Image (tube, rainbow, N blue to C red; front, top):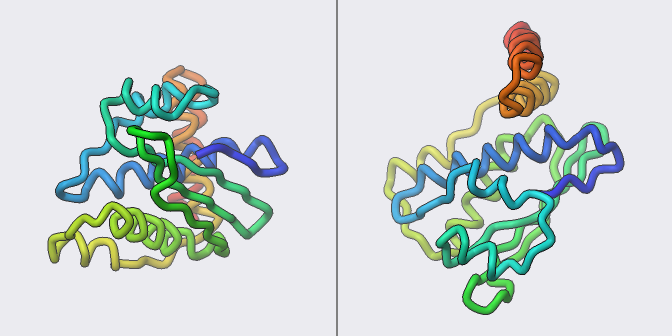
Length: 169
């Protein structure tokens, strides 16, 4: 997912939500999800989606954009067929940040539905489970993951500090 927010510093937010969606979708039986590292290798690459899909050895690519302004977020998600490069499904979602977990659940469920995958009762219950989350703590959590993914001592230190702040909240 591309950060389309007016504030370019929200890159951590789009990367974090992308990772969260990857993790949620990877739990689905019958759905094979490319690893985060492989998917992120194409971040910012303006390549033909058919070529990207072939390199990732997938039939369908999920892509989209995230726009965040203060306490609101808009996510546009789309499924693209690698075979012909055409859209299979596309949708936009507007949410308050305090319901970001509900947003992730909504998007994950819509993707599963669009791909016509039958969920197990356990997976269906897990997707439906919603928890209260502090927008500030969740934001710090995503920042912590962003810093951690830099794989540097400075990044690790920043992530630990950020995770501690999130835990305190």
